[in-house]
Image (cartoon, rainbow, N blue to C red; front, side, top):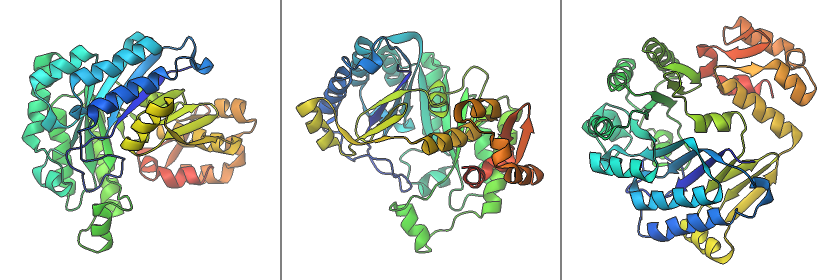
Length: 377
């Protein structure tokens, strides 16, 4: 059974200083890459696990998917539809950089089957964008949104980042306010993560740049939640907010453990209880597809403890919370009894609440969700 498909596009024009996703600064192999993805998809046609499956969501992520031409995107969508029929109401998302879009390009993507765009704005403050080494400015974001409207695309999301070096509470609130003025259906607000091995990591480690304090980050997070909720974008996950009916169905599939296939270098797939991941090298990926129609570099069978831990982690990321009855049915134990003292502590500290046999994190708890989840697994 299959629900969702992820396509990893590994190409970028430049590498942002905070990013550790697999990508290369060279688009010359994009035609061969698109053909390899189509062959990888075709390689699953005879897989008995997916017979009779259809696809409800497709997500082109990266990297920078908007560096792929609309013809290349359409080729991949056609390959998917011929192998796993795409449902009529499928959500098909493309991540895009504002610099890559104009009205004509957007229209061609829509013709290729894209019906949702996730725009990598990150900030609407030019200073922040320079700090993050983004290749666009705030005007490019505004121009992209105007292009969406002119092309007839209403379902778009803006990605925003808080915790940028030098970012103040007031400048973050201004960014959120400007983002809301563009009237997106969805906003993702992520705390900047300093990943080991990135230029930003080295700058922080060497003391060349300073990050906001934890208390400042918490204030930024709570302010974003309040502003977005007040504007009608309902929080449905730790970092995600949407108008009713415009939640990311693709990401919800991950968070509710639906089966998915990932295509492209470094992409992962999951069918209970198995997970496998492709090699993170585009040249090797294409060569392996040429040789045997797959490029799996790592695979594992999840243990019962891993499945339980992931259920807790994914459920508590969601605003809906963790259904204790569902947990009992799945794992044969009562989480509220096993971890009674810890849950009571989190509730007393205002980080968690229990309602109708369900555990939910408060905004304060969501900000420190990793620590809470670690205490329950």
